[in-house]
Length: 119
Image 1 (tube, rainbow, N blue to C red):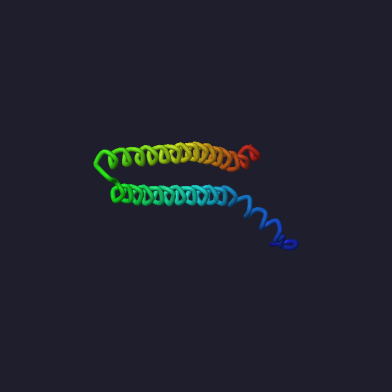
Image 2: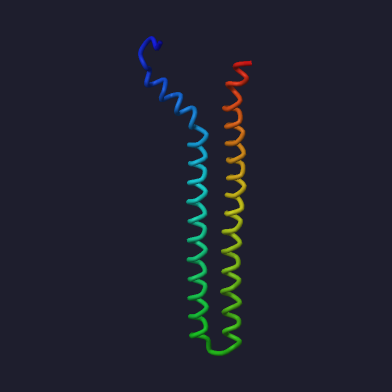
């Protein structure tokens, strides 16, 4: 038979410890989703701006040589900005991979701790 009072704080603490890995995984996935959404938005904005600049250069060009030179210049700027963004994305991917690896290691340790304690 049950003796004593129910300790809601202990139950809450146990639930927090139990679901800590899930909470951390949710935080990591939300962070990754937000970063990917920002990356896609920046990519779309760059692409639209590049297209508008090329269209404007086409309309304002006085001849085919000027048009080709302007398009080459615009494309070089576009490629440079995209490569910078991709480098940032690769840096973020590496950081995220490290965070997920650490999360998995921490979750494994947390799951193994009661077994070690019982042994």
